[in-house]
Amino acid sequence: MNTVTCVAPVNIAVIKYWGKRDENLILPVNDSISATLDMDHLCAKTTVTASPDFKENRIWLNGKEESMQNPRLQNCLREIRKRAQVSNGMENWKIHIRSENNFPTAAGLASSAAGYACLATTLAKLYKVEGDISGIARAGSGSACRSIYGGFVRWYSGSDPTGIDSIARPIAPATHWSEIRILILVVSDSKKKVSSAEGMKRTLETSEFLKHKVDKIIPTRINEMQKAVLNSDFTTFAELTMKDSNEMHAACLAAYPPCVYMNDISHSIVDLVHKYNDATGTIKAAYTFDAGPNATIFLKERDVSEFVGILNNFFPMSDLYLNGYLKGIPIKAALPSSDLLGKICLTKQEPGRLKYVICTKVGDGPKQLPDSEALSSIN
Ligand code: DP6
Image 1 (cartoon, helix red, strand yellow):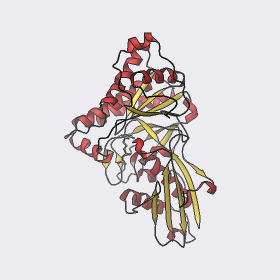
Image 2: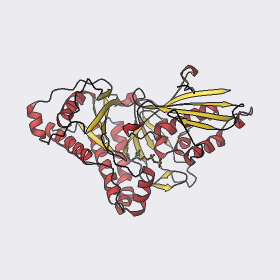
Image 3: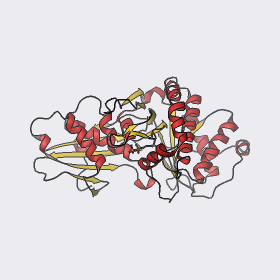
Image 4: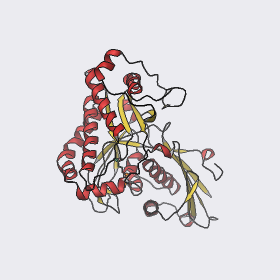
C-alpha cells in the first residue's frame, strides 16, 4: 500500500481567464496572472492511497463519496498515467482519493482550483511524475494550473493544439512583495449562478466585447501587469486589476443572454473602493470579482486596519470580533475619522450584507505532508 498527502492553495486572478479555445483540453483564449493565497487560511488537502487490495477507484469530497465518472477527474487521471514513472505493478493498483477544503463550501469561494491542483500534486508524488505538472492540474480545471506555484503566477495560453505549451510559470515568489494583503469579502447571496464553464462558453460565443478584450486589451495589459508585479508597483497593479475585473464582467453582461455574477452589494463595494481611493488621494485598494458576488480586495498591510474600519462603517458586520466576522490574519479595525467618512459619503447598508471577511496574504505553492496528517476514512 502507498499513501501520499498534500495541501494546495487557492489563487485569485488579477488578469482573468475567461474563455476556452478548446473545451475538452481546457485551453484558454488568453494568458492570465494570479496571486496564490496563503494556505494557512484557504487550502485543499488530498490523500491518495493506492493498494493492490482495493477493488475499484473511489473518491470522497469533504467526507462524501462522489462518482469517479466525472470527466474532469478522468482527464487528470489520464494525464497522470501518461507520465507515471512506476513499474512495480503499482500502476495497476486501484486508488482511494480523499479531499477536503479548510474553508466552508458555503462560503461560495471557488474551490476547484485548489482541489485539482492538490489532486495533481498528490498523484504526481504517488506516481513519481517529474517536471512541470501545471498541465495535469489544468486538465481538471483551467485556473487550477496557477495553484501549482506560489507567489505571482502567469498561465501562458500557448498556441499548440495539443495544449503542450499551455502551462503556468511563476513570475515572483510570495516573499518578493510581502506587504500585500488580500481581503475576501464574502457577500450574502442566494441566487443560483451560471457555472464559470458555462458562463465563459456563452460569453465567448456571443459577446463581441470579449473578442475585443482578448484581441486588443489583454496582449498589452498582461505584460504591464507582470512588470507591475516585478517592480512592486502597487498603483499600476491596482489599476490594472480593477480594470480587468470590470472588463470581464462587462464582457459577461454583453453575452446573450447576459451572465450576471455581481450583485448590488458587489457594486456598492466597487463604489466604496473608488471613493476610498479618491478620498485618500492615492490608490490604496483594488477590487476584483470572479464568477460570483464575493469581492477580493488587494491592499498594503499598513492600510488594512483603516480599510476594514471604513468597510465596517458602511457594511456593518454586527460585532466584528465576537462572532468570527474577521477570519484569517488578525486585524484590528481602526475607527475611521469623520473627515474621511464625510469624504467617502456612501449610504450605510443594513447589517449582515457581508457574511464575513477573510484576511490573508500571498503564499507558497503546494506541499507534501507527513503520513501522520493523512485524511482517513474516519475523519
Ligand atoms: C473567473 O478555472 O473555474 O475565476 O476551466 O471551466 O474549470 P474551468 O473554469 P475555472 O474558471 C475560473 C474563472 C475565473 C477567472 C480566473 O480564475 O482566471
